[in-house]
Each structure stands twice: as C-alpha cells, then as structure tokens.
Length: 313
Image (cartoon, rainbow, N blue to C red; front, side, top):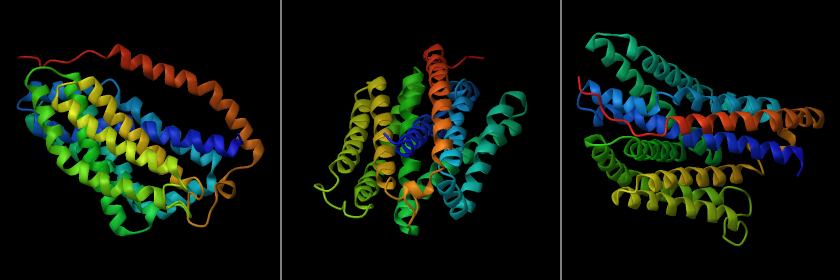
C-alpha cells in the first residue's frame, strides 16, 4: 500500500472514531434536559460521559493534525471553504467544555442552568454542523448540507440515548429507550435520504456494478441503524449500542470512500498529499504512537464500564 493511500485510510479511521465516540457525547449533552427530572439525575446522565468526553475529543485533534501533516492542501481547502461553520463548531466545543467543567464547581441553580444550556447548545452545534460540512463537501449544495446536518444531529441523539440506556438503570434507562424510539422517527428517513446519495458522488460509480463496496457500506449502515432501534426496543442495550456505532462506522467508510478519488473538487489524493519523505516519517510516528493511544482509551472505557445510578440526596 502506498503511503498516500495508507494515510488517507488513517485519517478516515480517526474521523470515524471521532464521530463514533463524540457522537454519543453530543447525544448525551442534548438529551440531558429532556431525560432528567432533578439534580441527581442530571449528575447521573453527565456521569456517563464524565470520565471520557475530553479523551474523545483527542480523536478530533489527531485527525486534524494528521490532515495538516499528510494532506496540507486538503486541510487548507476544507478549513478555508467551510471557515464559518468550523468556527461555530469550535465555539460549540469550547462552550460545551466550559459547561461540563464548571458545572460541578457552581452551587447556585442559576449557574448550573447556564452550564446546562452551554452543554446543550455546545453539543447540538457540532452534531449538526459536522454533518452539514461533510454533506456539502460531497454534494456542494445547501440542501445536501441541511439533510446531512439533520441526519448527523438525529443520529447523535439516537446514539446518545442508546448509550444512556446502556450506562444507567432504573427510570433513566426507560426514559432513554423511549427517547431512542422518538429519535428513530427522524433518523431513519434522514438516513435513507443521506446514505443513498453517497455512492453516486464519485465519477462513474452511480450504479451497483461500478462501486459495490460503497453501496454495500451505505445499505449496511441503514440496516445496522434499524437493527439498533429494534434491539433498543427489545431491551438489548449492549447490542443496540454496537449496532448504532457500527452504523456510524459504515457511514464513515462510505463517506471517505466517496471522497477518496478527490477529497476536494478537482483535487486528487496524490495532489493533496505531502512529499514521500514527510509521509514516511509520519508513518513511523503513527505506527509507534497509535497503539499506545488506542490501548489507553480502551483501558479507560473498561475501567468506567459499570452502570450508574442516581444518588438520592
């Protein structure tokens, strides 16, 4: 495998991992006001992501850093073309981080309410805008951006609801399952529209025979999404979370597969890449550092794997 192809695959992996992990973070942040009934339950919900949310954002930093080093032209074109939405994403992430960090340090109900609003807005903005950015990158239209934003936002809500059901018990778990069912009424139609358009983006792949693996990823992503909803309805929270996560992974595979011939209009992967020496050095750094990062994150999720209950004060 050429280093150019290898690093495009690495960047696709990092972005997809970010969407899987931050997807449920965003969903939890958006669902907290709807699912909680008191302060103890709000702490219970935030406790599901408390130990991991900041580590999940490392995936974004790593993905962007890898793009900057391996594909500087792609990085410059993407971030300059979508400058405003990406700035809004960063503002949302900052506001959300402040809300999550300060919430436990303020003692007034008004102060906690402001933090909760920051968490809600700071979760919804990136959840919508990342989908809008990548849909606009693929299709180049405002309609596609709107559909992509609705799809990514509703998918994050569903993913977050399934995660809350997996990580909590009692009334919160039941409410989270109901929220997942409600979210499914939006995410399933949005998925059909958004995912069915991805395989037709690259030139000469608008039919099954020309690009079977792109169509397979898109259709399997829809099936995994439907399976996650059915499993949630049946109370199989672990399998449901695996299904929604798989749907995001398959969506990422279809997305970056469609982008692989030309990550920007008129720009091939080879034209966007750094020189061979730079890519070779990056490859050695990645092969040494990446296993440690993945191992640490897997260990942290294992340590905090137990369900949470609301503390009664």
